[in-house]
Length: 86
Image (cartoon, rainbow, N blue to C red; front, side):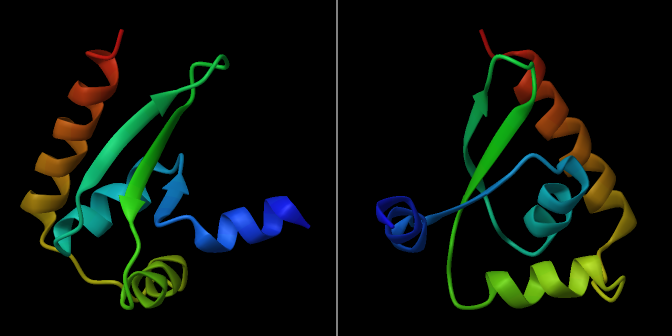
């Protein structure tokens, strides 16, 4: 029960999906922290707000529109941040 409560009160959305996070960055969100766990997978933390959940739903429903060049540039930037983590 404590874990569920903690997750609900967590001010960050956590995801390891690079594509989703790049699309969210195109909509003005910032990856505030990247955590690299033991499996070499990166977890991205994005601050939650009232619009985030709707954008995520649109992304998974293939309805979220982004500028292609911005998406590609954010993708490169995020990858660079991952590879520069120690």
